[in-house]
Length: 491
Image (cartoon, rainbow, N blue to C red; front, side):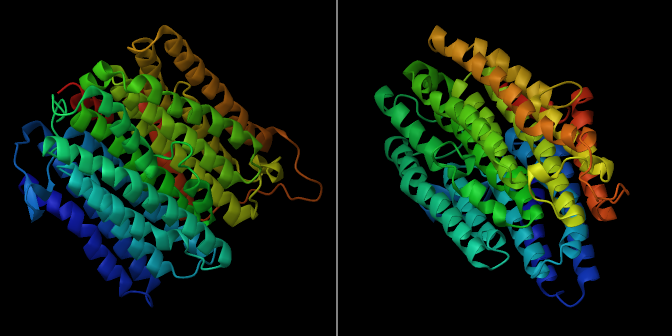
């Protein structure tokens, strides 16, 4: 099968799955089997594309041309391949987990959930393989709209209020900042094509570059750089599999992926360094890394704590992009993968705790590791990977980001601030994440609570096990993600 056809299949297949799923409301077993089959088929297609990567051509799949010079087009590239591969793996894993969680938690509107999840994955595939900035923007917006009903899934007043925040922040930033930034690039260069080294050339005065780059950083609200982060904690009202979609599979990763792609292929690292635009913008992801970590320490609600952890970790990726050097871009690309597997492990464990023990607060988890040992082992593995300790995959991305900080072209004082930020953040990760499984395993059970082992349903156990195994596996064998990240940064 040709590359063009495989790319088209990766986008259409989830839509076809969503259509089938929507007709199976009265046959839940078949509905969930279709979900698993379609997600498996997508993974096969994406792996097929990975096999074509070494022999990829410059061929571009053009679906439409709404305006002269603006095409809805897709092509194969290493960075997009990395994002697509993560999303395809984790959609299958999330589908397995959701089949146990949604039933055990007696969630309503399960058919709608599975169908919209599939539509969101289709948008993710389109973003991953977008050949130009216009296509990326279009499907970025479609992803926002398709996930809004998932955030408001329960339909109560709290969910509706959270949905308004979600839609308001994401649409407001994209239309108010992202879109104008794209139009400015088009005005000056007449080119929105993703091009190695960037498209700016001598078209844009250097004093404009910092302003335009800032519009992208804050206009891509899905990256959750403070103060554009409020939507993410608000969205925690959604069911746990949706939280996994938001934090690991699709939404936030689409944001940081977009920033990485724009940095490499629209601005180009050289233009950012020569203009000095990144010398002051870099303080925003640095501040977000630390502030979100401090806020996470104050949160007793487990999902809220994980939400602020995500905000902090996303800015590691933004930081790597803004460093605008090869090691920073490599570390940022790798962190998309490493954080995805670690964070989905944490959210799956949080969902298992809710379904089985009906606990939502960190203060209620003391001693619970004795009744749910597997769940808290998964939580510990995910936490240690996010901290960046060996033998867990999160070490590699943080290692490259530390090296990149020492290579930063900015003032010497900023280099030291970068190192302190990254090291202090890792210590804070221990304080607000690792402490949870430690208390669960080593604190006594509350009086009157049974010590009998009681884990989540089997699909939840399988869903938790797979990303936890990846957290360890990626330390010893970070391929293919490392090779994809390296190919994107060192073409």
